[in-house]
Image 1 (cartoon, rainbow, N blue to C red):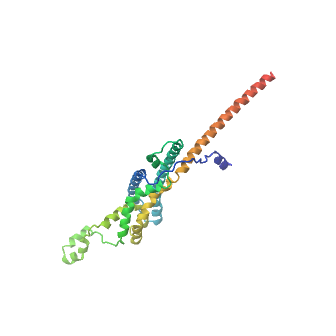
Image 2: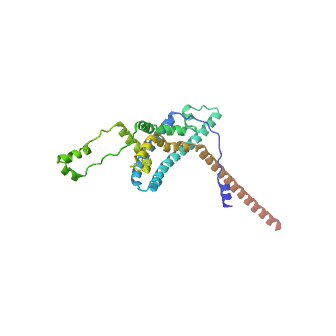
Image 3: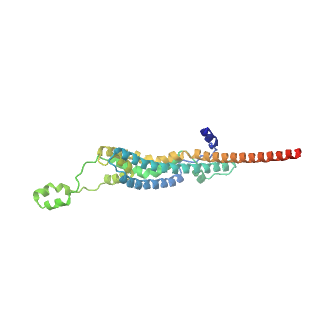
Length: 273
């Protein structure tokens, strides 16, 4: 009974026609800058959170780092949904203008909703990171174990020739190459994924490096998924407006009926007198 009452009182979506815009436009490119900014923020959040969630337990690492990724994807989804609803609202107004015989300029048509605009915006915003990840994926090689730094107390024995020769390898320095720079950039973007695998698993990290272009796209694509909900969210707005009007009309009708019933009672009392 309660579920039926909730369904009866809940607003049903009311879809209205709207003018379809363009997926590719300068507006989509400008919105892509916002997606790019969000990704930079997520990279900083990922670095901080990964340092906190570097547990030895695999399950805990998967759960908490998965929560970080879910949060980032949720922000993208919400941003896309908000923008999609706004574009549908503008597209409804643009269609009304067109039906009235007024011209719709190109800049207004670019604002109108198009179901692929969200994905185009997400791809434009993620493009710099995807290109960096793609460049690194092409040159990535499996990392190997490297010797760590010597403890300070060993330096006292390096004056002996036979010991110094054996420790000479520790003092060799390798030049920083372009793949090293790209690796740092890509790992900053994929810290939650890398933290799930663990730092010492070179085979899995190598697989992550090769899949980095696809992994970089996962979070921003939620912007496009959220944008697709624009028509539904706008329809809910119309549904809530219609529901509010029905409730208002119902209240007004009940008030009229109450006044009429009160008037009838007064008339009947007068007739009895």
